[in-house]
Length: 177
Image (cartoon, rainbow, N blue to C red; front, side):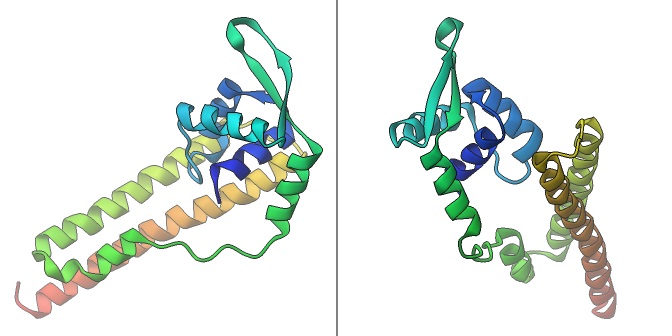
């Protein structure tokens, strides 16, 4: 996925300014596809130049509100209905695969940090879920479905890290460490 489709999807839901988009990214997509202010404003310019967005309102201090054009909706729909994305590369698992190259205590610290980070991320996601005013529109329905994936993902990572730590401890005990 690219920032382009995240922005088209958010603006398809409702017209937004750059500031609005930044806030919406923080509240809805930060765990999936974070974006900085400079990235958002740069991409808005590109999307408008490509005819995928149009400025539909202008306000004080140069504030512009963007709406999706029919060309933008067509591109978003084509992307959504296209081929499934390739599985992502996973740097965390690549590192786990090679943990034998560092001292056992460092490997345990790494796994413990993964467990802690997953626990923290899950708690943050649950706080976000509780703070959102959900309704029955498409954005809320599919947002809840995506949020459920995040909850399961972080819970699984936390449980997996605990299991891995036990496996590592058992191995160390067997080796007399």
